[in-house]
Length: 290
Image (cartoon, rainbow, N blue to C red; front, side):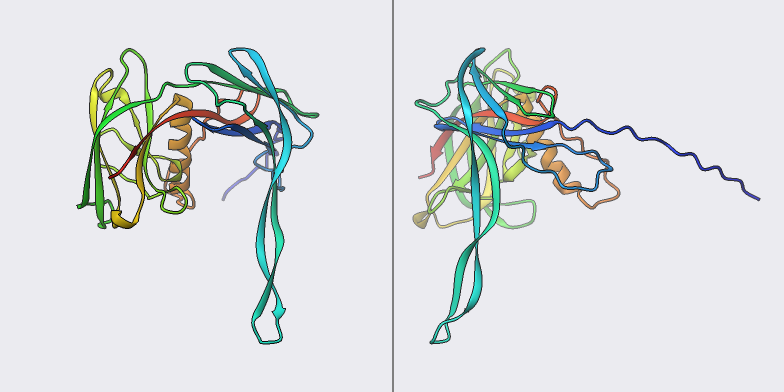
């Protein structure tokens, strides 16, 4: 025999919050932020953009500017028939409109300064997120070794060796990638066997200075083997914040764990006060591969 008792549990409603996404790279003359609403785990609806918000940018606690609302529009080609000669005819239709908040800068944001984004919208608690603009990393002695290594998946790869010179007495974090700028600057799916490196968001390699605080450290990146005579390659090493490091690391881990019932849940960190999301600033050093 067995007994059972049904216990009804009242799950408290989740207060909606503003979710911020803002990623700034050194040299950019625009700051763009995306705002969406958060929803509870039991809510059967999609998240959506927040319109009509007041978004401000501060430098060292002094108001710089207010971000203006706009939208990114993504189009797609839709087949509408054939012409008189039998060739297909397409027209562009709107696929997706993504609202954003943006400001144009007269000069890029400056390394060493502290920046804060705030956002207020009706029906939500006001949010803020703060980042200190890191100094550019010091990188030297790049050596390019074409078709010299085999990557994690067994493919023949180009190798890029260089030295990172770490600033002492502070925690430093780095994001690294090889980019092919022959047409557009796309990352070339970078990997690394260097001790201390982990995979990050969008194909970058992440590294913190736990193993080499205040010292020089040799790094080797692997990338798809290409004919450099017909490609424009560059190695990009970025100084990033602790927030940016753990956000990138966790989002990549979340992507890998998706649909795998045997993997522990991945928690995505946030650095937004009274809300969710991420605000990061990275300072890039670039080396052209010759």
